[in-house]
Length: 100
Image 1 (cartoon, rainbow, N blue to C red):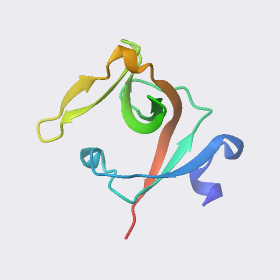
Image 2 (image 1 turned 45 degrees about the vertical axis):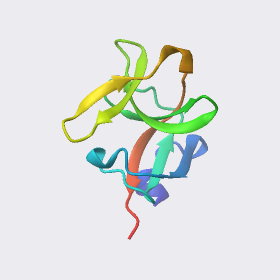
Image 3 (image 1 turned 90 degrees about the vertical axis):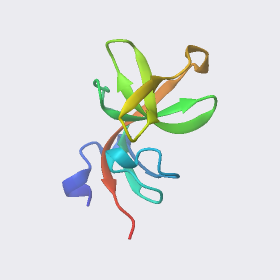
Image 4 (image 1 turned 45 degrees about the horizontal axis):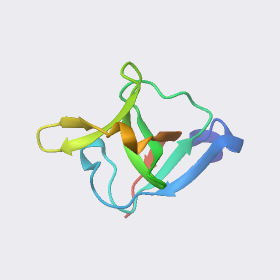
């Protein structure tokens, strides 16, 4: 697995997804996320962020320097996170391994 999925071993972490808020992106409850902290996020990428002291999965929008989440997954509409949430980008999701 390291040879095929991990480009930066010292900066790569595994996290388990909770909930189905990102089902439209192919991330479901129980999936294993491979997260690379050495990568610079680019617009539209899924990132792991710390918001109000908790890890969360969000989309990144560099042009507007903010994170946004899916507010209505059925129609794909997006809502930006509140600025007072003061999000910290923790890493970029590079792969998702689905649980069986």
